[in-house]
Structures are given as C-alpha cells and as structure tokens.
Amino acid sequence: MKYQALPAEFYIKNRERYVARLKPNSIAIFVANDEMPLSADATHTWKQNPDLFYLSGIDQELTILVLFPDCPNPKQREVLFVRKTNEHIAIWEGHKYTKEEAIIASGIENVQWVENFGPMFHVLMTYAQNVYLNLNDHDRANTKVPYSELRFARELRNDYPLHNFERSAPIMHDLRAIKHGQEIKQIQTACNITEKAFKRVLGFVKPGVMEYEIEAEIIHEFIRNRSAGHAYNPIIASGASACVLHYNDNNNVCRDGEVILMDFGAEYGNYKSDLSRSIPVSGKFTPRQKDVYNAVLNVMKYATSMLVAGTLLDDYNKEVGSAMEVELIKLGLLNAQEVKNQNPEAPLYKKYFMHGTSHYLGIDVHDVGYRYGRMQAGNVFTCEPGIYIPEEGLGIRLENDILITESGNIDLMASIPLEIEEIEHFMSEKHRVI
Image (cartoon, rainbow, N blue to C red; front, side, top):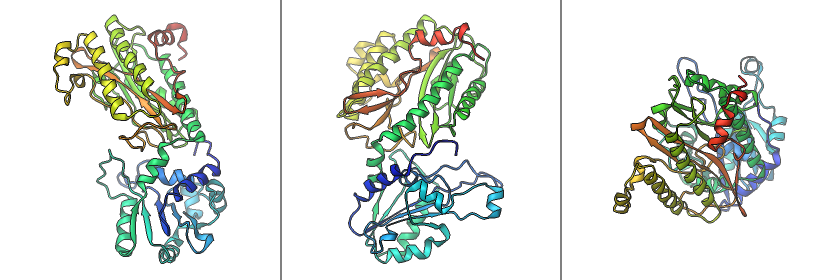
C-alpha cells in the first residue's frame, strides 16, 4: 500500500464502540471482499471490505475478523485470520502480513492463519447465542452478484439454524457516519491531493486537448502523491457531454467556447474525496456561462450554510430545491407563475437539476449513514448542486466536501479555486506550468 497507515489504537477504539452495541453472548464475523474475476485469469483491482478495514486496519484479501466479547476464553474474544504466505506467493504476489505485522496493524493479539478459521470458529459458535453478520445494506445498493459476505451468511444460516442471526449493518452505519480525527485527516489528505490535481489541470487545459489527456494529468498527480488512484470513475465532460450525469467516456476533444465539467477525487488510505468543477476550455467564461456558473455557486453557498448539526436531510433538500428555483427563474429557464402552480411532488427545477445535493462521504464515496435522520457533528457530506441545459450544450456542477462540527461546518476543499475570478486567474497564461 502507498498510504501511511493509521495507528492500531484507532481500530481498537472502533472495535470497542462496535462490541458495546452487541446483544449479550454475541459473536460477530466480518470477511474480506472477493477478488472478482475479470476474464481469462485476470481479476478486477481488489479493494478491502470497508467495514472489515474500519474495524481492523487490515488491507489484504482472504482476511476474517471474529469478535466475541463474552467468549469464556478471554484469548478468543478477538481473533483475526489472515492469509499464510509461502515462497510461491512471495514470488508472484509479493509480501503478505506476517502474524506480527497483523498484530501491530490491528491491535489484535490473537492472529491466526485463515486455514485455521473453520475448526476454531465451530468451537466459538457452540458458546454463542446471537450471530451478527455483515452485508452490503446500503440503501442505494442493487447487488446481483453473490459476494463473499452474502455467501458466508447463507452457509452459516444453513450450518447453524438454531442460532439467532442479527444484522451488523445498522451498527456499522451509525459508527462510520461519525468521522473521528484520524479519519478526517485521511479525508483531508485525499482532498489535498485532489487540489493538486485540479490546479495541475487548470494549467494544462486549452482548446484542442482531449478529455482523456485531462484524465491522464489527474491520475499522474494522484499517484505521485501516494494516492491509490481515483475514488470513483472520473467524469471529464466537455460541452454537451456535461449534461450526461455519469459520463465516463472521456474521449472527446475540448473545443474553444465550451465548458468542461470535471467530477473526480483522490483516494487516500481507503478514504475518499469528491470534487466537481466546471472550467472554460479557453480560460475565459462567456457572459451566459458566468450567469449559469454563479447561479450554481449561489445555490452551493446556501446549501453549505445548511450543512450543520440538527438539520434534517429532507428539509435540506426541499430548501435547496427552492433556492434552485429562484436561480432558474433568473436565468429564464423557468417561469415564475408555472413554478407557483407546480405539483410539489414533481417540482419543475428537476428538469435542470435532477440529482441530490449531498451524500455522506468516507471510506465509500457514497458512504453509509441514515438519510432520514438529523445531521450530526462528525458527518462529512458532499455539496454538489448543478444546472444542466442540453439545448445550450452546457452543464455546470460545483462540489466540495464539508465536515460538520459542533460549532458549524468546515469546508475541506476551501483552498481549491472555486470563484470565477480564481478559475480564470489560474488558467491564465502566466500560470501554465505544463
């Protein structure tokens, strides 16, 4: 791994917070993500199960974590199972955790090889009454592949039908939604790397460059700053392509007079960042582009002011929608009287701003959290309004990552150019460094 790992104390506290939420006489199991096949003998790039990582800090395949706080044998209340290496694995795949390294990384004293899991786990299950299993219970998930956690849950329910099975996800969602100091530092580092990439792009873009050349500049800056790469598939959308919300082709030429919508973010230490900026290919916005840009910026600033502890997400989205209506009327895109008479269940602004304004951010880009609750100190949200006008070939989205604190909020991307004057300044000829 390229990143600087967090100390074991962080993961020890996470486990303490988790087991405090379990019912008496409960055992909990977390298993690593699969290495997913691609074709032939190739696999997709592997990423650790975020919940397993959050509780252990172990960033390696074929890992299992067992937590049994009421186990009669104190030495088996926390057991970590990791892959045993050999000469063949070392030659073909490289270094794997030794037991000693796994202890240092996780703070778990009892580390076993993963092939010992079955026999030891069976003994532990004879003393447990409740079994907490972990699945991808994100409310936006639509998983059709029988992934490792799901297969394990099915096998366990079949093998131990008389145990009481519980869900870990509600506990993990509550815990992971509140970011602690060391997590915030990781997210801030990811944001700082993203800033470097964006400033590099500002000095690179000019008429005639390809979208994929911009993408190349971004990943160059990411990797050289110890990022694992993109937090998600980057969007580099010039002209009309900016009106395609999940545009990923990144294969068009950037033409004079167009605006490029860029949505990208670095990952650092498995934590994500998420940035959107819209910049003029020529280095100067047209008057109409400025008007649309400032409309989005006005909504963004208003929405950011509402990202405070105690705000209900549902109220937040309604207020942001109302602010967007005002701006769209000013731009001549909506009629004030039609807005007044609209169906509140189908607001007219959705024609030009059809996605949500904010989502939780953390180990996942769309991180876990309760969308119907009140915002809390420690939450990190994106703030990303946009206006998309296909008939004008213009789409503008702006996005920063916002940390909620007890006394307000902190913009983790506050130093990244956002105002029109800043964008044009950094795109001027004297700032070209590439």
